[in-house]
Length: 184
Image (cartoon, rainbow, N blue to C red; front, side):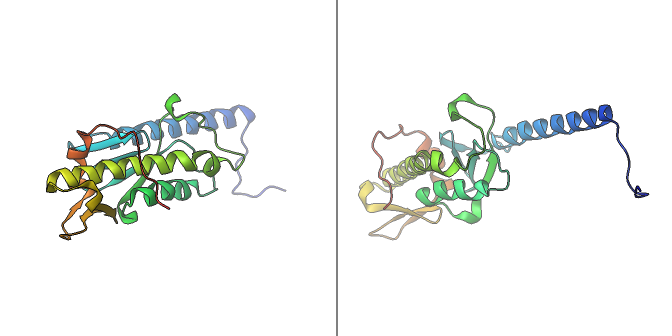
């Protein structure tokens, strides 16, 4: 017995329909990545392949793995955002392009956190280090007197504060640090 609301599809129609929706999904992923690269004309700081910081304080975290119900679009960005000291309310997560620089972009086997934990921490620490250094240069103080917290860099002695967006352009002019400090 069939339900009156059911539509029977031939195998050929099913393949046409699923192929078309897969193509639409791929197009959507590609367009999403294009939108974050300078579409607004504002400056963007891209210290590595995983993170960019726009002058409006938006921190975009690019994920090389797909979200397939394991919540890695929360877990992986939180690893990077925590190390960066980003304001989670200003974090945007996007699917990364197919890029060999990311390494394996497969999703499965419960390996996403295990295989990306260290590199995401290092990506966040690299960006944080560069932002702290940019603030130290602006204020004419030692970088040891600066610290990042909740999307801004602070000066310990004077309580001065600059948001990540205000430091993005200055930080982008700095060289990538060879030594970084990971948080405990």
